[in-house]
Image (cartoon, rainbow, N blue to C red; front, side, top):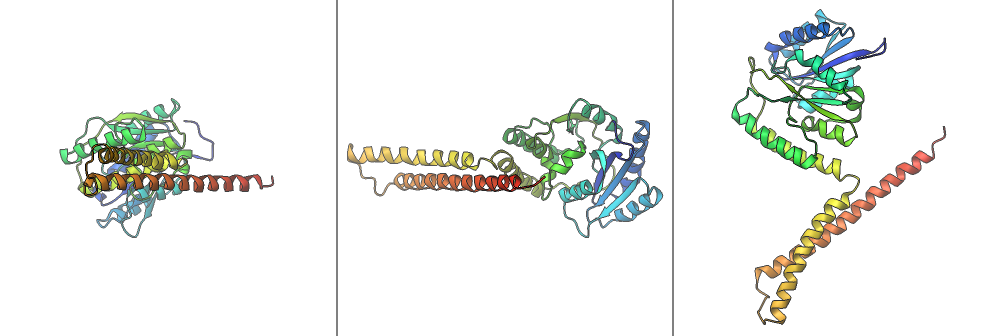
Length: 317
């Protein structure tokens, strides 16, 4: 990878939450790999996401031992992986930025393979844990989640959850992370027009610490997936989603009420107390409301875009 003489070639951002036992070994493996790859200007940034097991003390020791290339950021409490990654992205200066987990399940020796993949023209390369060494309580929900993410986003990756990724600097400058959005970085990058690729990586069994995965993360991830899908696919055309749902609901109501009208006028059947009558009215009203909401959202979006264009045209070179 080519870099200017004054720039950092590669930055490695590592979010940390109670992974004290693995940090020293991970640090050594990263440095060994980068030196073998003849990377001269690099930096490693550990982001302590509110650990209470001594991880920060270990990070301080590593930074003191290698101050020119190792740094650490510390949160006062646990904010989550997305916030940790965002803090790391804001801090580092590398032309290429890697992220990986601190539990040694990602293998730093794969870094050269990521660089080769980026050289093929990709802006973001996401790891794919093709063979996972995790219990079924993690692998099955992950499989379901990845299938939903592919279907809703249109980004055809096998493993959105893999923390081992490589980015060109401009990608990290174009996205903003919060909540649980770290899982959807490839979707966010794809929506911005960046080319996203995938690379099969080795996945090692966890030797230290405990997994931070839980059932709540799956629920939060699904809700965030809906949010990301809506904002990336319909943010500039809200009438498509609201209007589509409105037409479906209103059409259903119209068909139901048309049939009931035929049943009343032609067949002479009473309809005033039938539940289907109230369902038809409800869905028809819902359809009208959704269509109206879509039009209002479209007007707001167009007005916002028009305002930006007017402000831009008023600038003096």
